[in-house]
Length: 264
Image (cartoon, rainbow, N blue to C red):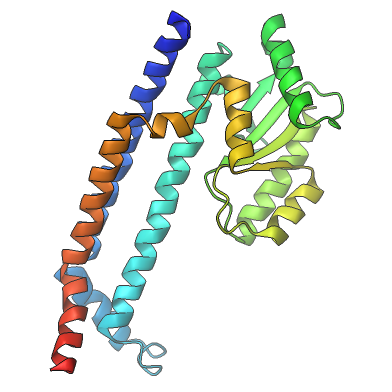
């Protein structure tokens, strides 16, 4: 690895670690707030006073816990999504010597995660882009570059989101860019939603293929970065603390207390 590549990798690691700390800190604060006695009592009171939930006997501590855990799951997804959106964009800009605004253009009011236009690249970088596209998509037609959307996971059938992705495919093709959709996680992919977006023009790469493509195109190897001892240790420590805080929270203990009393 050249000195330049090592320096770039260290910069990416530092940026990733800063982003990771920011999002995990926010998640920890949300757990402390959402699972507190004040919030738990408010949720239970709202369910009890509701004309629907109370009639269906969902005004219980157990269901409050279900709601709170569901919200944390959504929040985790959003934070992972932000990490996987922003870090590749930063890496792509650095790899191809572009300004962030050039890498993430706004098309018809919608921001594209990454755009690489051959007209903005050096001859060597343009050839690298072309050969990478040809390697992964041999049937791809001639294009002026690539337009990339990135998701850490693709498990939502949200109709508004799908409409935006369908529209973005049109805008990307109108710019003569080849549309590529990267999904880094292979858990729970929505086949019907992916089929709809494929019909709209997106070429999908998921799981290991998405990671390999990102590494081949702009040198982003998130898997190896996540396995770095410093980063791996920090993730395990912070996530472990967040999960432990959730289990020790008033909300969890209130439900466990109820079951203990019932068994006695």
